[in-house]
Image 1 (cartoon, one colour):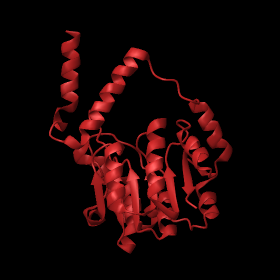
Image 2 (cartoon, rainbow, N blue to C red):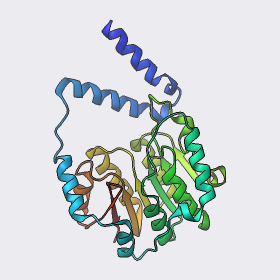
Image 3 (cartoon, rainbow, N blue to C red):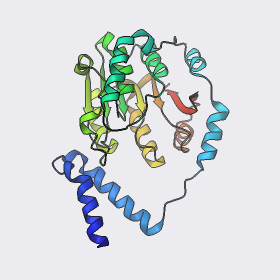
Image 4 (cartoon, helix red, strand yellow):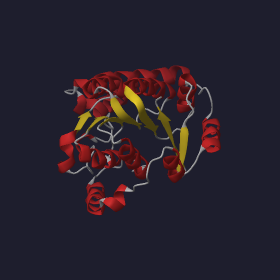
Length: 263
């Protein structure tokens, strides 16, 4: 009975994706990881989350101070485009599933504006709040955003990914609906050299280190990488130490974002 239940749960979780080969590798990795975890237990993190939070807290400054340090003007997209955001909130309210929150949109929009960016990559879309803020800036320069997003398998989120982004902004937007491991190489090939990257997907340490490295290599000189939730573990700190660059750490609503500028 136990094996029947396990088989049923497996089929129920993944059956809508059997005709979507792009996500098969991610499913395989998830199932392997789950079974390894059951056999050997979860691996201990190299440093605790508490230590990561302490590191972030020691460096953290406000959004306004971070933008001033980068010589970028503060610009809140919600006050600049109130009607767009009102419609976006309605779209989120109509969504039948719960996904990630909006995050620090003032930081992201201001940075894209300050860079006069025309090409960027983001990982993790969910409702599409960060995509919306980014695209509102990019549209001024006919820029393009390349996003990578793995669906929430159990939530059947495919049809709702990016739902807050209006149709008028979607012409400059390409979404790769797969995991970072498959999607980021495609996105970097399509984008070429990029002005910025926003990381908000695989939060494991190995996932972060791999994703940061790919994005960093695609980034132009003077470009920026922004990463969300860097207090979850020491992945961002490890990457900073690896490349030898001191980050800017922002605290907003109790969460930490990290910013790195490429020399």
